[in-house]
Length: 373
Image 1 (cartoon, rainbow, N blue to C red):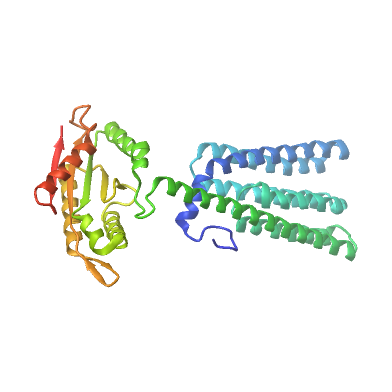
Image 2 (image 1 turned 60 degrees about the vertical axis):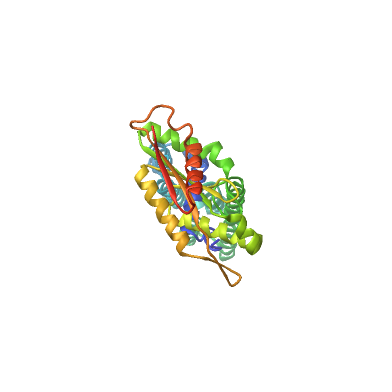
């Protein structure tokens, strides 16, 4: 975690976090924007009540209306671009700038009330830091200059004594510090919670030894999702069932730690030679691994299986100074949903498993394939 800006150091992790919280963030923005609009518009009414209608109050009302308009316009933009993280951040920053600038203009137009304005300025600062979800650095870059601008206006137009101005500056500085610390704590809590949820989710869907998906995730979500997608778009879908040859002998000769090292090496090989975020690698059993390859035909699946077979056989696994030579057998089953029957996919995994055992019975360290129709 980058402590100063309170974001994940890894940009991909930060983007995943923002994506995860995007709906909640936009809901918070909508509530805050409506509240801010009502806040500014209600004070336009009080201006007229207390000051009477004049050009002066019309200018004040115009400033308040511009702030409300920026907030309401941002609501429209959020509604049109609900999936955009960039738009969400832009509208948050725009409303913060508009709110701060509008308030400074109002304070300048009512110079005799800077003591009261200081209270309102404190509220504006807290809203910027805490109630409008935005990057912490952006909030600080808006709140701090707005505070400095307010103090300059108070010095030039407020006719305040030095002690009054110093007290006001100290209180507003404390408000900024409090806002930053509170927002920082909130941002860290959100990200720590997200990290814990991510860890728990990974534990529920992945095998702890190899990092591959587990069989539960395969049957509960993964396989059904990929079959449904292939059916909808009439694509090819290929599965590869693989099994390490003579794995019991590895455990007997090198111990279970040696067996674990082989499993981890084989899993790493499978993951490195498949497409990230497209293909899926599942630990199906003890030494059995299943690959799910979307948009891949039988020829592509067979080619990948041969590459995996050669790579594993050519690279012994190093363990405690020993070289463990291992091979694997593969069964490849494929369905082309553009031409297959409706039920062709039902026994895909079973078919791949049968092909795997055919490869083993045929001498091991080989690939057997079949097009399911």
